[in-house]
Amino acid sequence: MVQALFAVADTLSMCGIYGIAGRILETDPDLARAMDTCLIHRGPDAGSSRFSPLGIFGTRRLSIIDLVSGSQPLPNEDSTVWVSFNGEIYNYRALRSDLAAHGHRFTTQSDTEVVVHAYEEWGDDFVSRLRGMFSLAIWDERRERVLLARDRIGKKTIYFALRNGRLVYASELKAVLADPQTSAEIDRTALFHYLSFKHVPAPYSIFEGVSTLPAGNIAIFADGRVQLHEYWRPHFTGESTLTEDEAAEKLLALLDDAVRVRVEASDVPVAAFLSGGVDSSLIVSLMAKHAPKPLKTYSMGYADRVAHKNDVEFARLAASEFGTEHHELIVTIDDVVDAIPRIVGAFDEPFGGTISPYWLSAMIAQDVKVALSGDGADELFGSYAAHRMAAIVERLRKGDAQFGSFEDRKALAEACASESDGTWRMRFAGFTDSEKLELLNGANEFVPSSSLVQRLYDEADPGDLVNATLEVECRAFLPDQILTYVDRLSMAHSLEVRVPFLDQEVVAFAGSLPGNLKVRPDETKAVLKNAARRVLPRQIVDRPKEGFVLPMDAWLGKELRALSRDALSPHALRHGFFNVAAIDRLWSEHDAGVRDHTYKLWTLTMFQLWYQSYIEEGRYRCGLSLIKGVA
Image 1 (cartoon, rainbow, N blue to C red):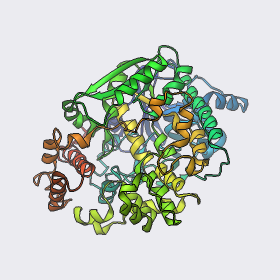
Image 2 (image 1 turned 120 degrees about the vertical axis):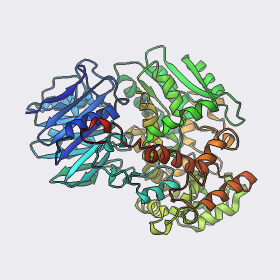
Image 3 (image 1 turned 90 degrees about the horizontal axis):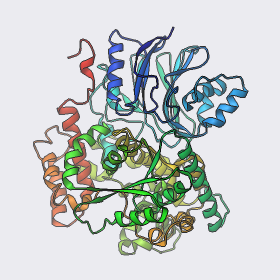
C-alpha cells in the first residue's frame, strides 16, 4: 500500500521531480527529504514524496493549473500506476475527453492526471500524444518498472544515475548528487565537450556516472537496467511548396494558436519577456489578443550605456504599440558580479552560455508565476553566424561565389567550404578540437566534438545545408544550452517560462520550409520577418539583431577582468585540467587586440567558478546533512 512519506498543503508540484528506485537503502527516506529540499525553488508552493514497492518518488509544485486539487504524485484508479510530472500539457483537455470516452475516471482537473491515464491507454507511445513541455516519471507497479521521459525539443531536463541496480533521478543535478552513492568525480569527456559547446551536451553530465536524458527520449528502468528509446527528433525536410507570403500567413496562424494555448493553460496571470527584438515582440503582439488585460511585459537594460545594446528603446516601442503594462530593469556590472555565485549554483554544471534571464526572471517572479518568451525562433528560422555560413558554404560548394555577410571574411568562408560540416560548424561554437589539444591536458584521448556534430549532420534530412544546420542546431545546441538557461535561470526564482516558438506544430512547419525562405545572403529569418511585418512596427522588424545577452565583450576588458583573471590564475588552475601557458596566450592575444577571445575566456572562467564552488567548496552535496550517518 502506498503511504505518504511527507506532505505539505493539499496541492503538490509540477516543477521538480525526483525518485529512488531499485535497491533501497535504510537512509533513503532521509535522501528523499534531501532531494526535496534541493528542488524547493522549483516548487515552493508544496511538496510530497511517497513510498512504493519500487522505491520512493516525489515532486515539488509551483501551482499553475488546478490550484486546489492538482495534487501529485498522482495515481490511476487502483493506485498501481503513479506519475510525477514537471511541466505543462496544453492539449490536456482534449486528451481528457478522449480518455474519459475510453472509460478512464478522473478525480482532478489537472493536466498531470491526464498523463497517468494516457500511459495506461496507449503504453509507452503516450508521450507522442502530449503537446507541451515536460520531464516526467511513471511508476508502474504492475510491470515493476519506472519510465522517465523528456519532451520533444528538450524544454525540461531530467538527470539520472544508475549504480548497482539502483536508479536515482531528478530535475536537477544537485538532487541526484544528494545521494552519497553518486560519484562527484568530474567526467573528463564531458569537460572536453563543454569547452566546445559551452554546455555539457546530453547524454553526458559533468559528473561521472550521471546521465542527462536526451530530448525526445524515454528511459525505462527495469530489472536493474536502463534502456533509452528515442520517440521523436526534428526533421528539417524543406519539402513545403508554399510561397513565402503563404508560408508567412500560415506561420502567423500557427504562432497565434501556440500563444493562445499557453495563455489559456493557466489558472494564474501570464506575463511576457520583451527584449524589443522581433521574436519577443511578435509573441507580445499575439498575447495582446488572448491574455487578460493588463498584459505585463518586462525588459532589461544596462546602467552604463553600451553602444551595441539598445534593447530597452525598442521594447518601449513594442509595449506602447500593444498597450502593455511595461516594466524595465537596469542591470549594473556590480549586479552581475554579485549574482554569479547564485547563477553557478542554478546550473549545477559549468555553463558558458547566456545568463541574462537570471535578473529579469527575478523581477517578473515578484508579480507572476508564468511568462512567455521568444526563445527558439533563431534556431528554427536561422539567425546566427553559423546559419548564415551554411548558406554561403552551400553556394561555394556549387561554384557560386556569393559571400553575403561574410564578404570581408572570404578566407574563412572558403576554409569552411573545404571542411566537413561538423568541423566548420564548430568554428562557430567555443574552442575547436585543435585548440583544445593545446588547452586541455590529455585532450587527444577523446573523440573530437566535431565528430558528435558530424554524426548529427549525417542523420539530418537530405536537402539544403541551411536546413541541415538548423536540424543540428535543434539537436545539439537548443536543448542543453538555450532551453537549459531558460529553465534554470527562471526556476531559480520559481518562474515558469513557456516558449510558443517551440510548439510542436510550429517546429514541424519550420522544418518543412526550404532553407532559402529562412536564410539568404544578406537576410536571416526571412519568412519570420515577413510574418512579423504584418503585426509589428517596421522599426522593430528591420532593426539589427542584438540578442538577449550580457555585453561581455565590453565588460571583460574592464569590470569583469579582475574576476576572470583571478579565476584563471595559476593558483586557481592547480587542478591540472588546463595548460596554464595556453590560457596566458589567450589573455595576451586578447589584450593586444590580436584576436577577440571574449567568449573562450568566459567559458573557462565559468568552469573555474563552478569548480571552486562545487568541487573545492563541496557545494555539490545539497541536503547531505539531512541524511543520517553521512558527515
